[in-house]
Length: 345
Ligand code: MRU
Image: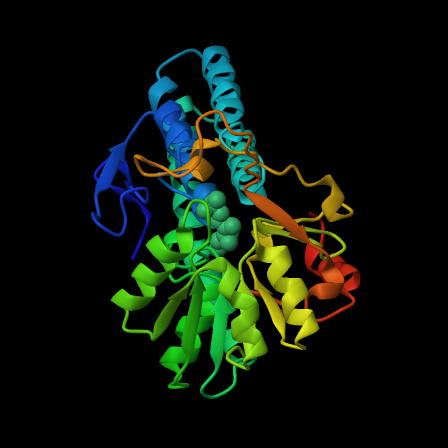
């Protein structure tokens, strides 16, 4: 399952708002529409929105490649600004845009047309590498998963949140492929229901045993000894190891600590914000109250009620047992491990 891919001159996105009822692949060539698709959750999940934004930059270059060098540069700066404003929390978005900007910088001495070709190659590389990173995360993470493991996950950190295969679900897939007889508890993940609509959908489609629970059932499952480990993805990891991920992740980490259950975060190094000291500096997206008051067209709350809808929370690093990256498994102290991964970034 590939939620984002390039085909015949267009960027294709699976419209994730319609899953699981319908799998519609929309085609894009306008970077402004691509930014809107990220904001509106046609595509979501930290790595997937990074890949999408990279193609957004490429399509901006396609649009303006026949203008003067100055006009081209101005248009590209504008496109980067529009795409970066699409969502605030997942750092992969900014990481991918920065990488595309660097690529453009490197090819500035060439014609606009040649620079545009270089940008296409770079976006393709970002997509390909994301897939490779997910597979590597799967291989490393599999070593932490015991035979017959009952794994709890939150939100969707699967194929649908990446170029394919997934991060947290990449670990699950690798364990399943290794014949470990794993079973997943998928939190439904209110209010946007990425767990029930997406995680349950993709695991079920792949024949990986999955049981759907509502978010408030997780603690009870743990107490009954039904959960051997928790594996989640990440939207941004600070230099000290604090992790922003889907709202509800923090509560799960506290529950896991209480029950002495390992709590693993699986993410590529493109999710690490090396310059950000702690999770306190992470901007948490606040989304529309309608996601809380309604499910589809059905209203669940009184008209005019006060609502909060933070889309993410931050899990403090002492609650995290290990982090699974494509470069290997990090154990505490995270600050040192992350700094080593950072290199010159
Ligand atoms: O709001 P979303 O659906 O974009 O949030 C996604 C998550 O929180 C995922 O867990 C995270 O992006 C990791 S995806 C590999």
